[in-house]
Image 1 (cartoon, rainbow, N blue to C red):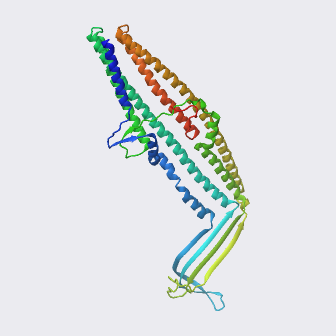
Image 2: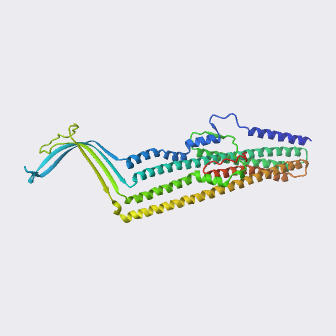
Length: 469
């Protein structure tokens, strides 16, 4: 009776210790960061290097669109603010009084000039203006979708690393609880040995179990620290101190309520990689239109307005027009319209360019179709894996319940002498393995859910009827 009471007191003390361990710490050191999953995602939004690079690339959109408008769509303007020059020519020809050229001895003739001017030029070939604008819009859209894809990859990666760290922490807590349970087994073995009900061998085996469990706990603690380091690297924040993870509820639910067809439709609408493939098809369409525009007539418009101050050529050095900025000079104006038909220029090369653009467009369409098939396969496969992990979790939980009941009975039998310590130790190891298997099965389900999120392109919400755990 006293042995049973001692065992009950020890079990109660162990339960109290585990209860205290399960509570979140209220105080933390100043250099420790209490990190929740939402907080980790916010930090990664600001600091993850891969996502920041993709986000920085989108800042080119505004400047690139303005450059497209002013460099390739609107008329080109060239403004000469100030151009002054001094010239000297060695001339061996002159003109007579009637304007006829006559020969003479070579002499140096000098003159100077100053010029300001504005030139506007505009060239159109077919629908080139619309094609330039459309092409730049698609380039900007591709950058935006690439940033969304990087954000999805970052979000899934952060959640995966965070859950990996939680898994290692839960396994560490399980190992520590197993160590405390083995300490209780040692106390029981010593008590029974003191009553001459067991031999010294049982005490030594119990001590050996504690040492082996200490080694397992140490190894698991190292695995937990490595998982936190991987999480820190994924976050990308150089200023983070020591990390302390919060207690997060795992998104575990019955997945039978998820509709595969609905998930596939969602993926085909929002998956960033598929959207990038669709943008590639539209860019190939524009490239085909550009290639066909090579045969369209080209319209060129040009307007030149200039003010020129120029001195009369003189045999003596003159700087009359040098740095002349007066406004009494007349303005020179010139305007011309040019229409050319280049359809027969480089005929065969233009035709080859058109065929090449058409083939590239067809290849882009095939790539987009292949991407659709891959996404559908990935989504359906991820959902099957999620269902499989749910069934594995149910079996692991049931196995843990059976192993826990078997261990309880084995300890009772050991106390009354119907089971050896070696048999009890085997049962303890089996129960410890099932406890680890439950933890691993829970997080394998979470990993499968994250794979489904990545395949669909957005976070998959659990069905309402299934609930979450």
